[in-house]
Image (cartoon, rainbow, N blue to C red; front, side, top):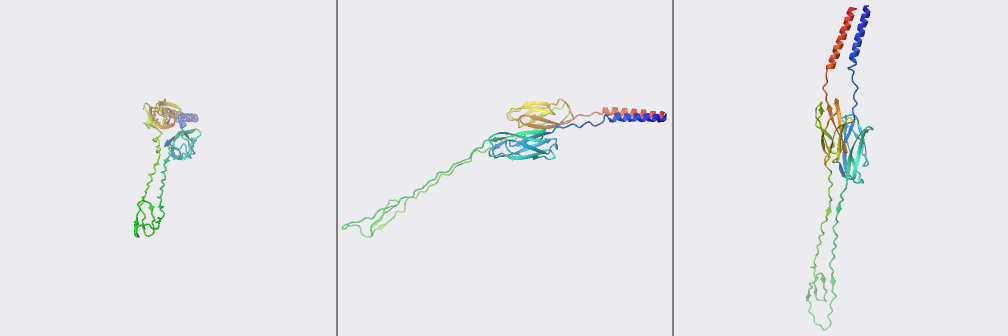
Length: 318
């Protein structure tokens, strides 16, 4: 009879432990969404220019290599750091036509992000060649010698004939002195200076960070939250989502910027990624905090003590 009482007490104690352990079993880990966002600097430029793509993956470590595809040019893969960030540079082909080209980055078949680059028109450089000036040398004419017929009186030896016509040489009969005018005018031609048109310099559009900024890093139930973004298409509708549910909407201004409140329909503890779709994809993250209660653990402890005492009492009676 005493042995039966002990067996009953042990069975009661085992059942109590089974009931206590079941409620405190750890819940399955929640699956967190992997988000890939891209930024580009500069956002535009002529053919032959370069640009740099910034890559961010949330959560960090969810992806190590990001590949790219675009009709503009071949872009090498980006290797991410342990913080989930990285960058890669590429050059626009000189044959690229002016247009806006989408660029897509992929981490896996279910995770991708996008940005774009605009190829602008190049201003041609015009060079003016100065005219060629040709100077013609002066013409020198020699007069034939003068013949004096017999019986004609001329000036005696030593007579000098001087000509004043520039550039003319005169030859006289023997016994006279010939003077050559060497005072012919000298022409100095100064070619006009050359003019080179350097063209109009190409100026890139202001760089845009392309990120989504949240005014709080963490919130509790009842806290307000605001999102601020830039780099959107001007006057484009902005849709904000988190975990597949809408959390806000607005319209970007003429510069592609916006500010709007973010409202979650339900509170779930943990980090939540907020995505803004406005022609390009912008992302940000916020932590939701919920204060836990210990009332359930206290009730479980009271039940456990009751069953242990009951089992001990049965053992003593037997």
